[in-house]
Length: 389
Picture 1 (cartoon, one colour):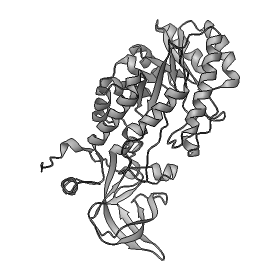
Picture 2 (cartoon, one colour; picture 1 turned 180 degrees about the vertical axis):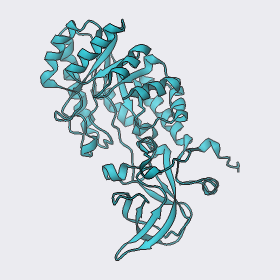
Picture 3 (cartoon, helix red, strand yellow; picture 1 turned 90 degrees about the vertical axis):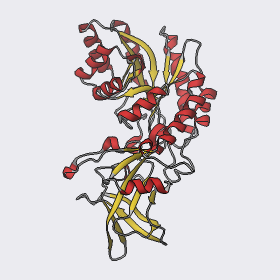
Picture 4 (cartoon, helix red, strand yellow; picture 1 turned 60 degrees about the vertical axis):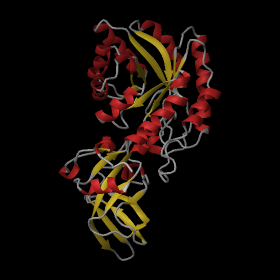
């Protein structure tokens, strides 16, 4: 929860706004360094989860690289201090202009997702007198056991190269003289809470690693992507994910050769628990069989509940009354603009402040201007002076 001094500070801010607890972020990064970076693994932070410059500068300073899925993200990463050799560029639909930006900066690696993309990248690299390092994103057909919209590693997903066409791609690569195959890349989905999918991924990665090297290619990068989930229901009890178990699983199950390095692309697990959406109750309303708490944040500020049916914990910051059942809804002219249905929270009234928790990832970064909504500035914990006791 939030100290009273923080809540008092919030009362003087224009809502809704995003709040980032940098202590939680730094504690998370320390665990990544302890259990991941210390083993020689490389971790690229997924800018698609959060691209706030202040957040990126802290993450860069902790030794992480950048995982980008657009030209805009590549430029944001460079502007935030990431070196080009720390930037991996993924995405199923890279435009020519985005590819050229990556070539211009000589980024670390292009994660390629189709045979045609390889041909386009080779052609553009030749035009610019460049040699592009690539990793083949392969669909391991592993069921991530997560929401269908964030499952990405199955044969019929739009992402990646299926195993059935892998040999055709490998046979074609020697003709693409401006490409250098350095690795293989996987990403099976997001918000994965069980560890079995990661074990299955390791097995598939080991097999494909052996197969590709048997064909004469030398892979230096084994990139297993990201997808490690967070605890949305109990963020106070699990503010930092269990990175010891996560990285330990790969250490135990992945089979690296002496010339290979293990790479990860983590986003949600790095930043998710650090952020909260702070909003104010505008009205309370009683329906036929429901109570509504209408807040000033909406799906324009946090679209995950509408898009993924995601359930974020809701904490009332300014009421200690007995609990009551509400539908917590926003002001947007869409019926899907609902944060939680039938949630038990302390009774609220107009003006009460609410924190929608675990919103650091895929929250502010997906904000829209629908209904011509204006965005309020983010607030960071280091901007709040809390008296020492």
